[in-house]
Length: 92
Image 1 (cartoon, rainbow, N blue to C red):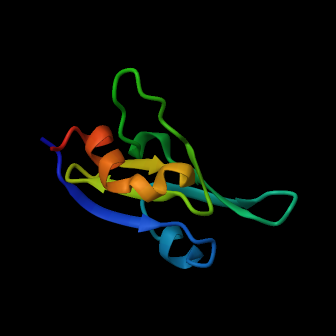
Image 2 (image 1 turned 180 degrees about the vertical axis):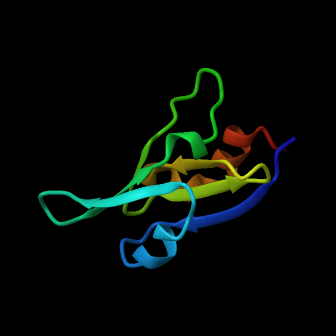
């Protein structure tokens, strides 16, 4: 069973905090000027039949498990982060 080691919400203003994470490859900006995190695929948690996001937008939540692998919880689901964490990492 995986346990959550770290969780951080990408606010768009915490660029220094998220860029320091080993799962972030680069930060790019959209045409509208919004930052997007491009993730290192080798650092992302993979689960059969679950799409692994390789980018994070403002409002998304980054979650790290005890093995040091990451998952992106989409902003639309961020209010349900505790439930989504259990789904992603198979915790109860």
